[in-house]
Image (cartoon, rainbow, N blue to C red; front, top):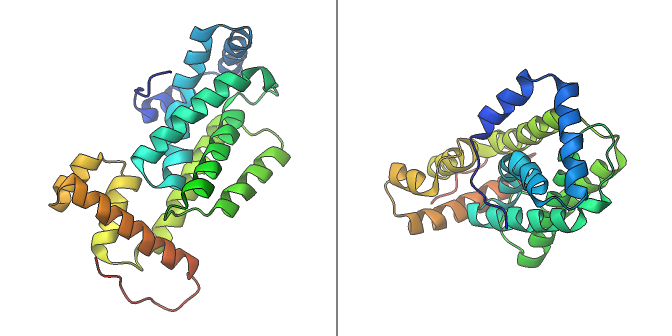
Length: 221
């Protein structure tokens, strides 16, 4: 299985943004061709390049847990390797296809585990339908729009929940601090933080589902 350790995604985004898009896409097209021909190193290159975006912008916001998102990323990698021959190049890069694979993995996990999460299975299912029916989108734009949607959805409801819950979500999911660092800053053990984050997500989900209600009573941790 391919490693989950990658360079900071912000650095990778900057390098992509500074590159000449046609040249970058042509290079990726050649890597895809090699991967479809059975070149495992080429396949690994594609996954390492796009794995951070899939993890941070697609899987973590929808699954709400670092462990679940990492499990989903590993499953996404496995499915991508198994199905790379099904990918058809359409000039927009491979990220949109990998994103759909990741969304399907997230959907399966949501349905199977019935976790307390921000995204409901039917929401992810609609995303998949939309992604498959729309024309291919520039992969950098798609990665950024994924993050904007996730952050906007969370930020809009943070003021409606208890401040400690909001801070836990803000540090862990929006600022992308590590589990251990967030627990330390909140003055709790990592195990206690796991419980706190679970409750925070449950409270936020409740507010998101009732977003048209008047100012809500704060939830207590």
